[in-house]
Image (cartoon, rainbow, N blue to C red):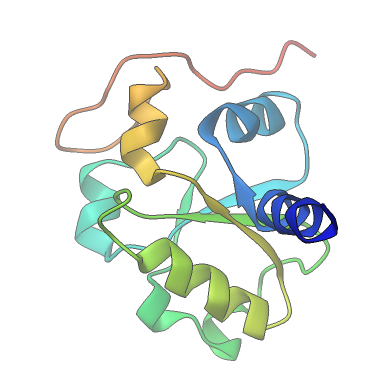
Length: 131
C-alpha cells in the first residue's frame, strides 16, 4: 500500500488536469500557463492567459523575468507530444515550481474550454473572475 500511495501522491504533485487548471485560473490562483510548443503552434491556438516559451528555448536568460513563487503549468498538443514534459523538466531544472497539464490543449478542448489563436478559436467556457 505504501508504494501505491506514494505513486499517486507523486502523480498529483506533478500533474494537473484541465478541470483543475480551469478552476485555478478562474479562482485567480497564482498559476502561469506555459505553452511549450514552437511559436507557430501557440499563435495558431492556445489556452487563454498562456504564455509561449518553447521548451527548446527555456534558459536562465529567457526565464529571468518570471516569478519563482508561482506555479507554472506546461502543456503541448496532447498525449502524442512530449514538449510539455520537456518544458516541465527544463523549468524544474531552472528552479521553478511546475506541473504538467494532462492531455495538453487537446484535452483542454475536449473538456469544453475555450482557446484563442489565429487558426480557429474554439468557443467554450472562458476564464472569468467574478470579483
